[in-house]
Length: 266
Image (cartoon, rainbow, N blue to C red; front, side):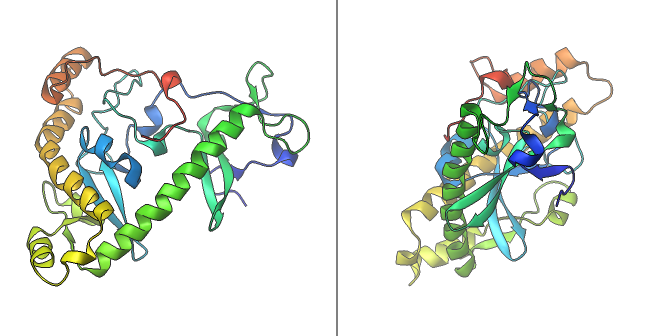
């Protein structure tokens, strides 16, 4: 059953249909945050604030793409280019996503509202022969399988951290942030845990995630400034981009074409 235009990729529906790679990150322009996995936290921390999102009594780490919901992220240019030095893994395979069907199994889904599912034979077919995904889609599915394994490990780490009562509400900035169930590590609780009997209960993976999260929060101030500038009616695209690049403080060219994104974690 389809949800919001997202369908399972099966031979019956897609044997004579095609897809094309996205060429713009416009689909991510109004994302407040996106989930990340343990294998990419160091790269994410270098570019984005890392927070934690609580949903259905589970917690996952997320990269903040803006400091408030329903605002345009300064990481997406007006022409759709990605302006950060890292692309979070979950954003690399649009219009595809996966649904977990078991401990080590997942089902490939595609978003038909993306405009990237076509009937044009010049695009990439879904299938090569009956029930055989094309090599391009096999690469996408392989990427998702690796990421899902990392997501399960990330969930295990966060569940353990949740059991240690390490989280408190993210209250920095606007009030809208707390309404999205964002959390941060409670520094006082962490000190108590490290100094007390909980010292040996925090794994190396959890400590790496905690450290990356704490360091990454230094990005919040310039992200707020860049976001305000990006969404200011009086700011031109060129001026906003120039000031944003200055705020990020990168010496490299930050623009990244969607076509250059590879199916690899980290």
